Image (tube, rainbow, N blue to C red; front, side, top):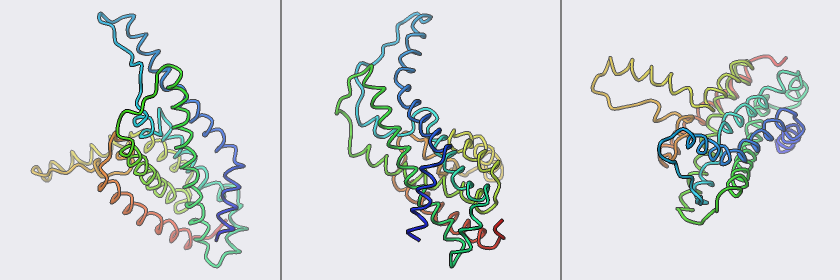
Length: 256
């Protein structure tokens, strides 16, 4: 199993799609603060009152947001492409036949995706630090321990979203839906679907005080300060359901 994980990590490192999305993530992270400054200056050209641009930025805020701009979407797209690569190019057929259980290949890819997730988070934070330092003075103000807590929760929530993508890639073997789900979850657009579900449920149960979007991993991932208990439970349940289901479906289908 360890050798299989090493092989997956090597393939990830060699993958062109991974390199491209990681470079884009770095560029978006660096551009975040300069873009905000440019929009502020542009707004001041037409506003009656001048909008101030902060000269300082707390380190805690940078650390708690490792996915500036569309970086969460890029990380999920990279994960989806990685999950599907073996199946798409027929490489999985040679590997799966050598394993005592074909599902090990799915588990290996998911474990390897954790490294990919950490890389995207690191690139997002480092790029954001560089871009911020160009225009602002970074201070140690804020709750640094709290930002580390949020950072850990975002890692778990991203892995929960990755487990959902794994079902589409390895379980259902559909690249188009895997990519669509990566875009929808990474951009937060599934909120529209959750809102429609909540609206339908509210008509059946008018007194309900429950919103499904409050307990979806992609929505918690984009929250400014996700609740610790909610994020932990949602991550554990999502991974605990979708990862075994993906492995089970992959084991039952023929490898091509």
